[in-house]
Length: 100
Image (cartoon, rainbow, N blue to C red; front, side):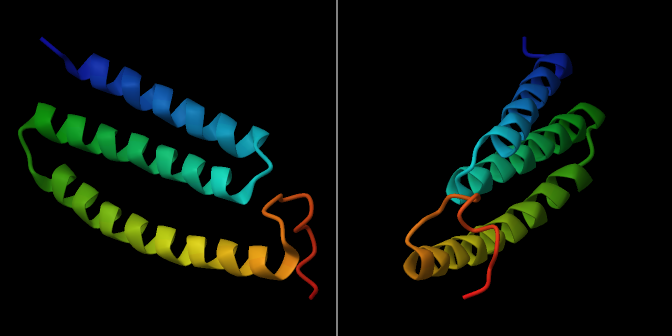
């Protein structure tokens, strides 16, 4: 039987991987993926606690968070594509100044 502790352990592991990805990586696309991992870790915690408590409000919050995440990915990816077309790189070190 999978308990609440197992879900929270996986959530903490996902959050840690996402945090390390943000701090270590220097590629904008990898940073966006790391942010998504952190968001999914929070969503997993919401769903786990919602199921444990027998209340659906946490699952409703996750549904709306996923909608916001989809919009965030769309806008973020379009910005990355525009930056790549202009500067020909996705490295954060090369994009420190946004003076065109």
